[in-house]
Image (tube, rainbow, N blue to C red; front, side, top):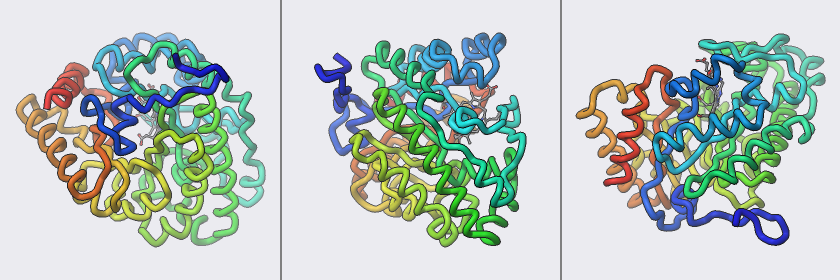
Amino acid sequence: MMSNATGTRVHRSHLPLVAAATGGTPSRRPVWFMRQAGRSLPEYRAIRANHGMLESCFDPELVCEITMQPVRRHDVDAAILFSDIVVPLKAAGIDLDIVAGTGPVIAEPVRTPADVDRIPRLEPAAVGAIAHGVRLLLEQLDDAALIGFAGAPFTLASYLIEGGPSRNYERTKAMMHGDPQTWSKLMGRLADITIAFLQVQLDAGVDAIQLFDSWAGMLSAADYETYVAPHSTRVLAEIAHYGVPRIHFGVGTGELLAPMAHAGADVIGVDWRVPLDEAARRVGPGKAVQGNLDPTLLFAGPEVVEREVRRVVADGERAIAAGAVGHIFNLGHGVLPATDPDVLTRVVELVHSI
Ligand code: CP3
């Protein structure tokens, strides 16, 4: 069912998300939410009361259970693997933690050429638990696609250099411009880790992948093209042969949509700042768009939510008229922790009913 006689996974091109991503005709309008697995769900908080964040990410049964929670609750068209962008760095041996309310914190930030030389490679066996989680999920998922993911080299580099979340990314940009050779070496090593992590997920059978370059929007288009795009392009190229849809997303990337599209993904994720039809024109023809309901508007009451959902769906149709091959409904960034999960369920029902 999931695999053919040789053990190779059969591509599930009938899935609505895969069809929308590849120019097919989806059986219904696909919708899922970034950060759908997480703190907006009481059943997630109940699990996390007894298990640490990283502990949960490396436990196949917990990965499977937490990934399934929003699928059961909301009837979304995709499950996104419960993990985090720093999981492959941790697995490779970098000392870090994920601190509640803060995000990833790196014990010894990467600042010098010697620090870069110490960045390890990712051995696939070190993320075997994640592959196991993927296999458990594929036994349970029927009509929802399983999306694997990884952080793009720039967003990973920003955490490693800054040591944690950052407002201005001054140390990151200082290395990028002040020591481009060290920067390039760091980005190359991170690209290797990202490729290895995505290959493990793809070998285990995920139906699509999303490459999160969440903080790329902090860069000018010129810096993005010079210092970031070549590495993201390599990541996307090295997994192209799997033939599964590759989604590429960042926040505040209105000015970067064209160069991000150039990096080679099949689907471009768009935040709420640029309407999808305008985004499709910037992306250029032949790719699908994903997005882009403002996650804060889920707090604005049912009338606003319904009006905005209908507007995003209409913008998605205009995006297709402007040359996009499909539209995957999503938020413009992740679900905020205080979001009422019932509002998310209603958004899914509405998207499917239009
Ligand atoms: O549902 C899903 O989307 C799957 C799970 C997922 C997590 N992190 C779980 C998580 C995904 C896809 C990510 C990706 C991720 N992690 C990104 C890219 C996506 C984006 O938001 O742009 C980034 C930048 C990170 C780094 C990170 N990890 C941040 C910024 C935070 C939030 C800090 C906070 O607590 O507010 C984390 C922690 C994190 N990752 C949580 C979850 C569920 C919260 C930790 C907890 O539950 O205690």
